[in-house]
Image 1: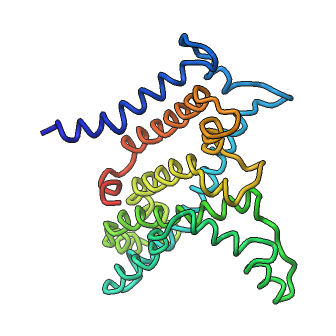
Image 2: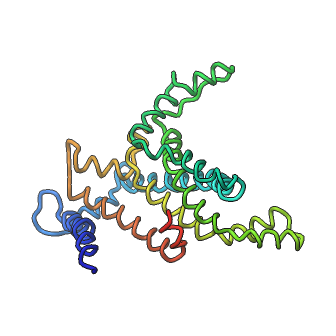
Image 3: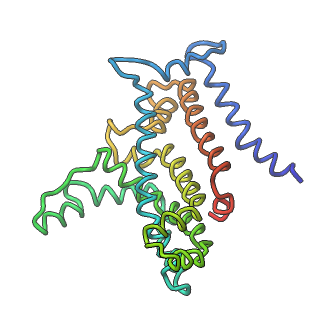
Length: 273
C-alpha cells in the first residue's frame, strides 16, 4: 500500500532534491565535487555579503508579511468563526478566498494598476486633497502585494482553529470576573495558539520563497532569493551549480520551518487547511 505514495514521493521530491544537491556540489567549470558554490553564498564584495543580504531581505519580507497577515487575519477569522451568523459563514469565507481562484501573476499586475503614480490609489488621494504616495518598485509595494496574496491562507488556518474554540471557557472566564483583555490573552489565545503557529508557518514558508511579488512590484533593490535563483538558471551569466546551492539553502530553511510546524503546530488545522 505504500508503493504508490512512496513512488510519487521519490519521483517528485526525493530524486529532484538529490539532483539539485549533486549539482550544487559541482563548481562552475569543474568536474570534481566541492563546496565552492556554498562558499560563494558567503561572498563578501564591496563591504557587503552580497548574497546573505538577499537571504536576509527575503527573511525580512517573510517576517513582516507573516506579522501583518496575523494581525489582519485574526480579527477576520474570529469574526467569521464566532460572530458571523452560521448560515452565512461558508458564503462569507468563500467570498474572502475568492481571489485565490485567479492567477497570482494577474493579482500582482492588478496592484500595479492600483499603486502606480497615476493609478487608482493616487488618483483617489489627489481627489480628496492629499498628496500621492510612491510605493511601486519599492519594498513597501512588495509587502503590500505579499500580504494581499497570503492573507487568505492565514485566515483559512485561523478560521479552522477558531471554529473549535470552546465558548464555555469564555463564559466561565467572564463569570469569574475576567475582563475582555484577560479573557483574550489567557483563554482564547492558548486555545488557538497551535493554529496561530500553523498559519504563521504556512505564510512564512510561502512568502520567504515568493518570486512573483518581488519581481513584479519591486525594483532592483527588492530582489529576493527566489529571483537570484532564477537568474542563476535563466540569466545571461547563468551558474546552475550556484543556483542549486541557493536552492538547497532555501529548501533547508523551509524544512526547518516544517519540522517546527509538525512539532508545535496543530496537525488537525494543517490537515483541514
